[in-house]
Length: 413
Image (cartoon, rainbow, N blue to C red; front, side, top):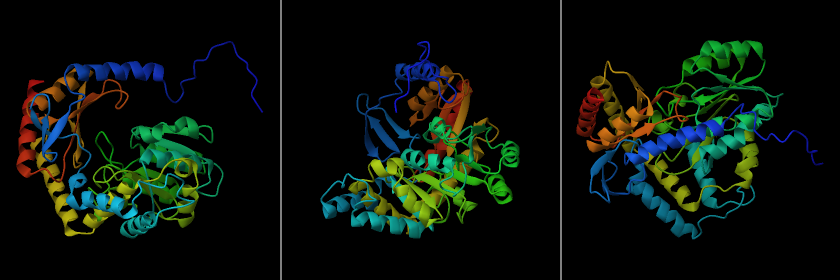
């Protein structure tokens, strides 16, 4: 039945959960500033992996400190060859249909190997955004917990791939935004409402980590459901590359669900969801974009299997240890400076205004390092800055040079 047409002709939205009228002009102005300084649209060729790229037009060489491939597995020969081999074996890029209907045998093999490696029921998909779009509305409505709807509390710093779903979830339940890592606020919500779900990240994309111990304590005390995106930690940390969230939530049980990108440190492309319940695995395969959108393509299935091979080898630990060494070295050199992300491979220097962020990014590029300037709405207004990512395939001397050059650039800013 169609809705009747009413109203006075005003079509402006209420802007409760998003406001493109505000965000788009602000972000476009910032991107324009970055473009004016030559920090967007660079065309490069690889000279020595990500540690030495060359800009095609100018010949300028630099190290990429904005790559999310924290272990350098995206260029690992085993990973690359596995993608080629999968295409040669299957001779089709994909079946282009819902995999809950028909699937290639290589897909089932991938699910089994991922599940065995990570000790959970693992559901792969084309991206974490697709996974969140399928999972979070069902969590809000209570269908993942066989209950009435849950109040859903988003951490203020939760990634856009989850935050953009707030209006959808708000059609199902009450949606709240929690100050970052504020366990007192979260506990007050748990005391007030009988069913609560918390949505956040393990390692945050602009630096910092979740208070996992605090979150786990509230889960044990009040039965709070926990949904974490651990994209920036999967593979980079933890035994077998299980990530940061699994250091505390090792047994996922019935009230924890994790998603993570396999396009970052894992070295492939796509995303995955980990759950302790087989029934959720089956339900989610038939839900929302996981049912009507595409699954992983054949080459991506192959590269994911190839990365799993590396994950099962001693080489993963070697790269993790080099990453940890780089983090400790960098933190020691920058001790005493206002830098977010101590102990993490993601560092963020707050400059305040957009112009200072771009100038710092540009100066680092001149010295041989590409680091991303970040602006609103990626970060809060007046909290612009520069994000830097350390990697396990960065040699120690490169980390030393970068830390020294960053200190010089900050002194000149």
